[in-house]
Image (cartoon, rainbow, N blue to C red; front, side, top):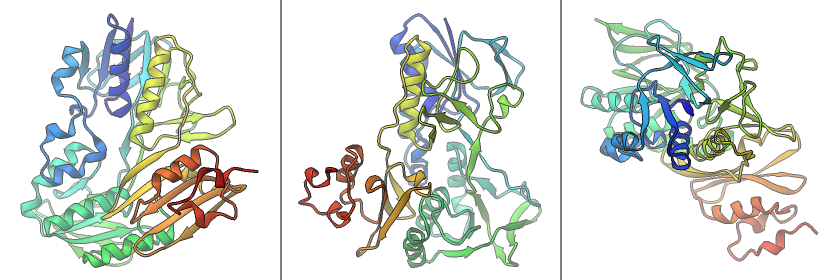
Length: 406
């Protein structure tokens, strides 16, 4: 049996491990277009903190060879499902019996004059982080394009470097789409305290250079910002270029069913590029490491002959927005869907939002303080009715039976 996996991120690597653990004889091959050993993308800021690269790698490179999992440092260029073949960017043709597409995402490109100047970097991969970190001694001023989670992560590192920081935000607040305006105001206060300049409703018009090196950023609002380095953090999109000539895309979406099967036989998909169409009509996207891992395990099990349904358990994501800890719990991305009600409050030193539908707690976002996060996760999992009891959700003495729907 020949198993082929496209992508070596959280989904691809975990699927390869699962396949080998449950099938000692199969031929397992992984296409690693990034050409970097499997690493923790969610810990890129560790590079800026001086963490050794091997600490960002859950498995040493020799692990894959020991498990007889072949890692090919090439990108998939074309997927021919009718022939059960994948052609790589070097022209190599690989046949498969079962295929997993775990391509992940790629950074959005900024098509403006000067984008190829030295000093203009994307911040998305381990290689990006290492390159930016290597420039730190030559940089005094940085312009960060984008005020989402990666832009704020870059700003957090730049403060430690002692750089003068400017952030360009296309919208009216930082932290989008992770938070809404009130949460963005909370993060903005932290940025201001750290001396970070933020320009709202502004974008790059051009990068200005001298002798091929970046010298300034010109914006659509008429600002000229002298800078030594520009970090592009303007979001990502599914890295599905290799599927353009296949029959696997619906529009630009890689749709799979609850078994993570694509529209082609013997082809599954998992991770950030996928959209799971649930039997209840819900469309579920993968945005976190944990979800990619769980999808990988389900897809790999089904590649081995199981008939598992992927269950999206209560999402639980912990991280930082700039220097503020947050907990995102449940289906927070669905907070603006019809029928949902967002309840916000800002106690001392924190921002909190609870989302309900018909009085049932569906999701929450805690910023500045994660206190009560585990209790809220349990309430969401139990389908707790919090109508008229929102003040009790964060009470340390609250009992689960208080929230039973009677």
